[in-house]
Length: 126
Image (cartoon, rainbow, N blue to C red; front, side, top):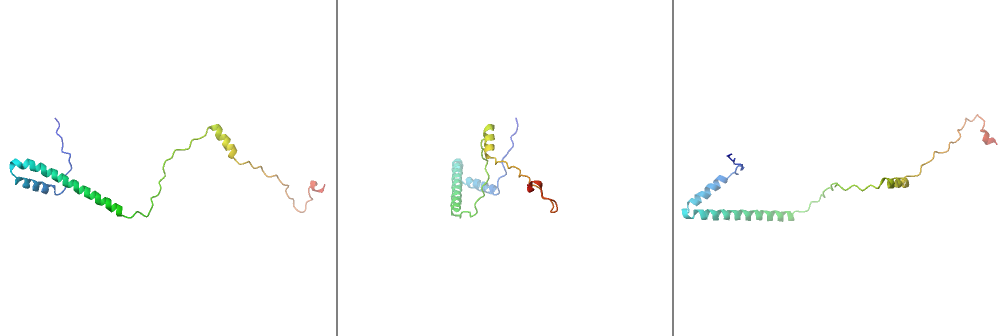
């Protein structure tokens, strides 16, 4: 049979002193009452610890309520959103045809100017 190891963490500082004080006080009680007194003391200790925790929580809640609100607003984080649904291929081609601007035609070519010493083009004299 395998031996189980004690996996509990090391007890906090002061635990030994409290334990010794508990048992020294318990030794002053007659033996026939020790078990009842010990269990009553443990339940009283649990109740006291619970009361202290509740008081700490309430005090923290009151302090949080009294604290002024932060002036700096948090930055909005980008969230993932569903991608919009795509239209069928035929409909998208029609939409592209409607949205596309009209094609520009190339400007008409103009006659090149000739140097001032040359005669004017033939079409201009007629």
